[in-house]
View 1 (spheres, helix red, strand yellow):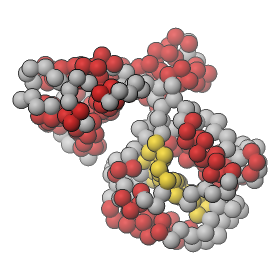
View 2 (cartoon, rainbow, N blue to C red):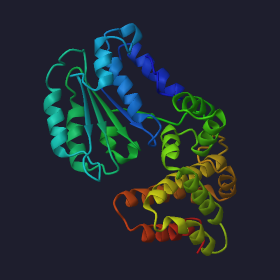
View 3 (cartoon, rainbow, N blue to C red):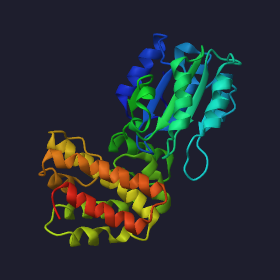
View 4 (cartoon, helix red, strand yellow):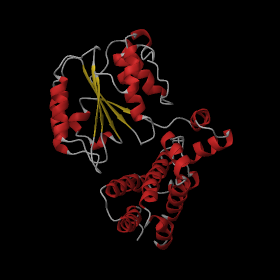
Length: 328
């Protein structure tokens, strides 16, 4: 398979290519990862490959099927996305997809359905989807895009192959940004380092400039967390109290820093949070305490998406983080 436009993740590419070449492509895949890691890009490339008329070079990008797939007009590729502020896929959408999947593909060998899950993943539509995955129609392939497969029902996870997507290396991300945008190599490297190679964050930083501040706040919170009192942690978190957009980015970054600390504690070296000093300081904590920190950051981020009061959420998070490491 040709993965032009999807960076990094060599293991994922190899596994997908092998399955495609052997004609053993799974009927359901879960593509999980942080926003900006190329989940949608990969889903579209897989769909394009499955409808491409040149199996030896799929997706070739040149045949009529590929051109229509890239334009979003191929009749055998359908996108199912959540609606409204919650981004939740509804029961009705799953029912419509299930009915459509019973038909034979119009032109290709496969009918491909890309399901993009938002922050809210309700049980009712998942139960409808489960019935479809238990007895998948012939020729139907379902690509589930989400932040974390843990948000899906265990019975759905057991019927799909899960792929974890990670950002590319900072060097590869910098080269990509330099080639796709009119910026200097130095600026591309700075953004790649700032955003940990996350292409979505890098592009967002070019447009909004908030990624740097979010990282600084998250790093300050991580450094202040193990201190004696809660005052320094609350002061570090103060910029988030009335800035919802900044809070959203900072919580995502904080979760990565906590993840880095867990990795360091276990002897790992791959860091994604962009704050090695903070991660190294936290790595001195017992692992039993550390593993709770990324969970708390993720819970806070999800509550923020549910329109929780930002000020109360940040204050409660600080208290929960302190409690998790045995500080009061």
